[in-house]
View 1: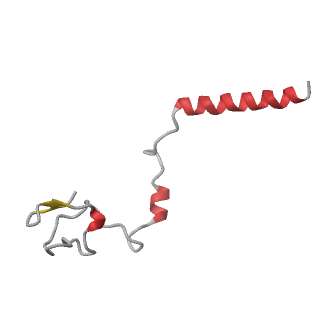
View 2 (view 1 turned 180 degrees about the vertical axis):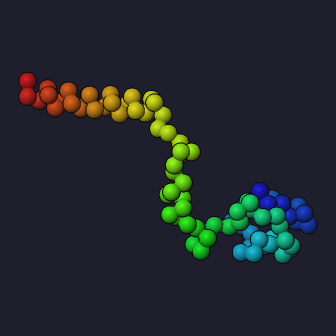
View 3 (view 1 turned 90 degrees about the horizontal axis):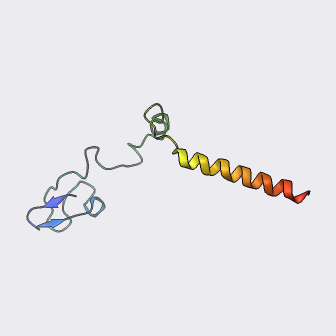
Length: 83
């Protein structure tokens, strides 16, 4: 959270001006994060989509178990329609 020393206030990153200044007194405030603001010009969706390689999070085992249980249950409901 950016901190403005003269105003003695924390600001949300979106509350700062586009240049990263305090909206009340106009002094330079620390950057919101190490990458700066995300804009349409610096956002690369293809790079984000490609980053889902080896380091991507895997689906939890219990979610897979629930999907298998749902498939078995719905399959049984379809079979029970005919008997």
